[in-house]
Length: 104
Length: 177
Image 1 (cartoon, chains in turn green, red):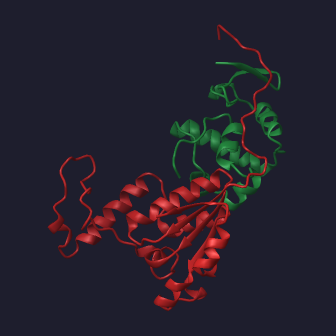
Image 2: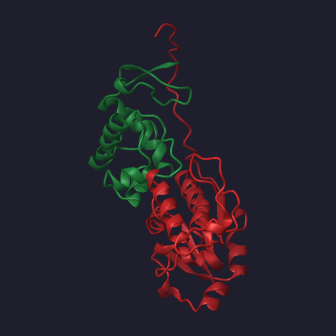
Image 3: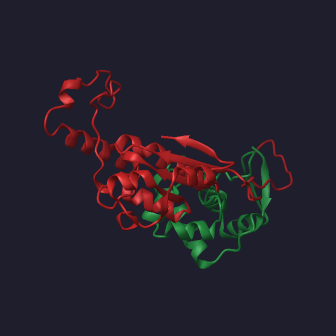
């Protein structure tokens, strides 16, 4: 596994650039990853990211868009505004969790 | 880490550059099991940033009709592939015709779908619309069934003809379900 340096931290990533170790993430890394994909994080982004982190820790899998909206309470429309085009993947990338596996 | 590859930061390709990819689904069925293929795939396409349209026609009109979308049914009558979850036995066809059996089969399928955290049809249609999906009703079906714009759920952009659909799907991939 390659190691990358994000915001001064050495972290393990997969070949695509997604972090693979949940515990290596911190908020500085989150901000850095967001800036890599052209997203400036607002409080609302952080709400989503924290939900992604907590839910992953709780469930063992990354939440799907539907789960972020139904359980996390951020409407689908807004998710597409906060993380344009491919929200599920982008949210997972910034939050340092794997890409969601569910079909929906 | 024993072998470390210190490399330039690799950023995943989120395909942000504008793509002209477009997918158009034709949803022609109104049985519970057959409405999910187009809904699931349309939702996935939207999640990938692809322009997505669904054209509802014939029995598929029930998916966007306020009166019917909550009450789509499933029967295994005529479906020889039906077997109970996790079992090899086939369900006898005759059994499906007994009174009340459609209700039971529908309830079972809804539970299985909900166990996967997949939403029921009304929420799913709303979700697709919220994600930017374009929903269209078929004019010929609307005329046959005596339906107007008021009969359809929010998010349906209009009642269009087959010709309109052929025009709007130009350059896109068309999938019939």
